[in-house]
Length: 346
Image (cartoon, rainbow, N blue to C red; front, side, top):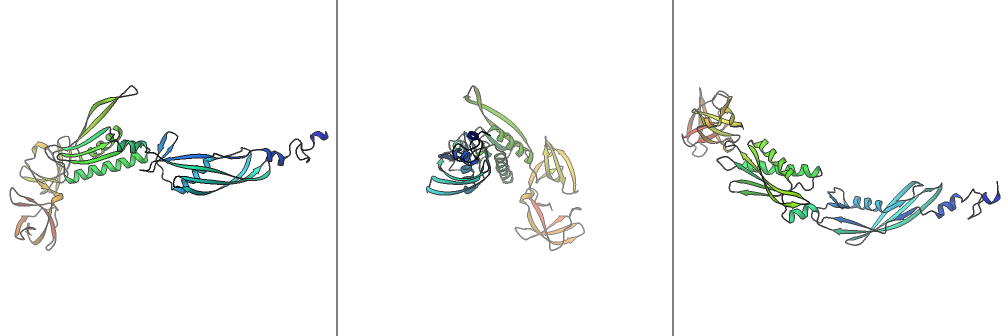
């Protein structure tokens, strides 16, 4: 072998060309970005990556590790790299990240350090910006036919709205938010940030409480050549709700569900299910949710002696075969103010 090619031209060690040590010494194998910005929303804590906002569930220490790691650049020939980070806050919005790196480059052990300045910058995210600016794309109006929605119905509708928002946010739909839930004299208004969440919530409310949904779009402008609409989702609940006690042909019936003008009910005298048309109902007595607890004073054949929960006077009622009352026990009753009777509901 020629002597000119058998030694390292830098250190003179036997080598074909540069030896491993000199080659490793002349290679810039570790660099760090001198400065990185971490943009976060001070309201909700979401992070901005490029032009995209995303919710973050990691703590600050984990986030620091991720940012610092993104600042470190290693040579592709480095093998078995080991990296440790230390952090020092120099101010409330500045952190110095120091990286200590070791590994093997061309079979030669190497180690080095570099630093990155992390700037923490606050910026209101797309979602919070829309919410604070009063932006919305739809309103869900929960109304009932011939009555005001009950407390149970409005509470159920509000709960469905909150659960739907959480599910869509978890699925990555950041702009599907509920910005306001407001009680109105004739029902409930739910203001939403996207038409999609409006469809989801209104459909879920109608599914849980009965009724139907109609949509009423309104053109509000254009953006990038596309028409922008705000949609009112009207959820019209049925006249009768679950638990209502009604009178049909002088018999008491408890409403279990409603569907397209039909009532699926429970005959409180026979203890059996019945299906009737809504227009067969003569009047409404009350709702089992408002039932009172009455003390069973005595039982005699098919007669139950009760103590009126308000006056403590004895009242006799005919027992229903499907009930199993016990003397000294309690039974739930709905007061029929028109006839003065007690309706036994369980």
